[in-house]
Image (cartoon, rainbow, N blue to C red; front, side):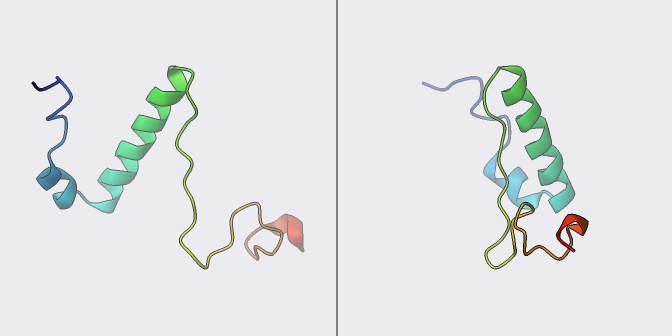
Length: 64
C-alpha cells in the first residue's frame, strides 16, 4: 500500500539536489507547516557555532 506522498521526492533526487535547492525545499515545507497552524521548522547551527540569540555571538551588533 503506498500513499500519494511516496514519490514526492526520491532519495536520488535529494542526493542530487544542490544546497540552494534543499534550502528552498526546507523554506517551502516550513511555510506549509505554519499555514496549517503547526510549529515551523527550527534550524540549529552546526556544532561549535553560537546560536543567533547567543550573547557571545560576534555577528550580533547588539552584543557590543
